[in-house]
Amino acid sequence: MGFSIRDARQEDMVQVLELIQELALFEKEPEAVEVTVQQLVRDGFGAKKMFHCFVAEKADKVVGIALIYPRYSTWKGPIVHLEDLIVSKEMRGSGLGTALLDEVVKYGHRLGVKRISWEVLDWNDPAIAFYENKGADVKRDWDVVHLNENGIKTYVEKLEESSI
Image (cartoon, rainbow, N blue to C red; front, side, top):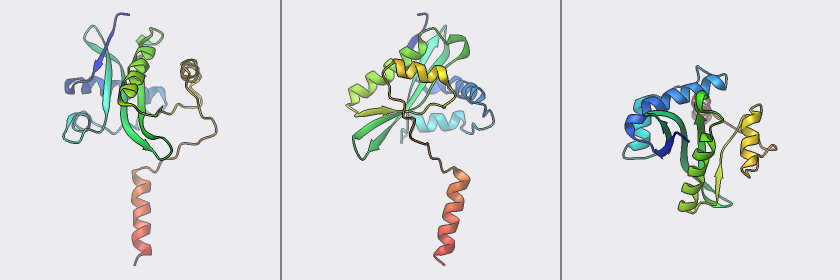
């Protein structure tokens, strides 16, 4: 194996952010990452913990992460959302992705969640095949909907205008 998986620590967030930036480059959106190390520390380890993160480490370097957070399904109850499973380029094909996904599934099982959900880009055939091979059901009939920061601002402005 050559790697170990553990819960992330605050001091890992510099390397976690580097992997997030590597993923953004892979997904052809290198300028999209706005989160900072300080935000990751605050949101993952502060008074209001917003996510849990597993890191994969090899020779004292973080070479993979799985970042998850709790959600609630009106149909099923408590679920966990896997925001990102990132394996550094040099570690792809090493079994690291499987090991990280195993940790997420074991974690969700311990919590008693009804589902673990995540998204995958429709052009990322290796990831789709990987997830399907693990028994995941890739929902091809659903579209992901985002209302970004600017969209939220515009939405609220329109609400305020209509209430005048």
